[in-house]
Length: 298
Image 1 (cartoon, rainbow, N blue to C red):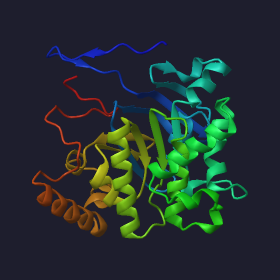
Image 2 (image 1 turned 180 degrees about the vertical axis):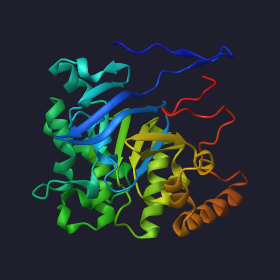
Image 3 (image 1 turned 30 degrees about the horizontal axis):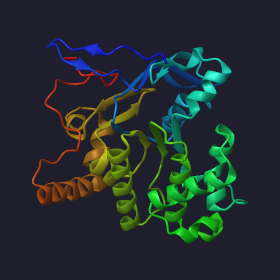
């Protein structure tokens, strides 16, 4: 399998190739340009948050990376492969290497939870029905759903349970990358916090790389290593501490507004309980970031 070469930093350390690398992305719908010259980089094992104002193209970016939207220009590399140059069979094989949790789970209403989880298994494998059911059962347990939820329909589930069922389906093929679109939207604070803990635990246990579109400031503080902020059709990337030092008015209002201050205070309380420093779990001693999310000393 073709992979991108590792990169050597000036100090001689070997840096693993990025899991996702977007260069010069331009997306547009007719005359409306959503992204223009956008660079986006996600490192192995990272939980990358994606935020921005309404209409800034957060979900569009996610859907473009996974191939649901065709870019007007630019290059997208995932797991070392240029997705724009893949043959149909190669693109299909690549789809097995990522999972997607769409908003509200996006479950098929006419299928049970078990049947929803089996959908990607039917599409991408030739496993026997009995084995598919066993895998579905394992994924149901993995995301913390009770066993009896397997035979329930989405309408019979709470919002939090639908999110977990959607997450179980996203994990059906044991992906290396997980894309989450507003995973805690509509959940109460306790449910959102539990979902964040689940995502973080799964990321660590399964070695996943995550890209998470969210408006939830508590989620950004609690589990994201870095944040990509979509502004003026491009992104500014850094830890929360790094972003808060930028003079951009939208970033300042977003992170220092009333909700931002409340999320920061909550993060500081968590940090005191853990005995570490606040500012996001991905703080680093490395140099500052450029516009594409790369460290300038790399």
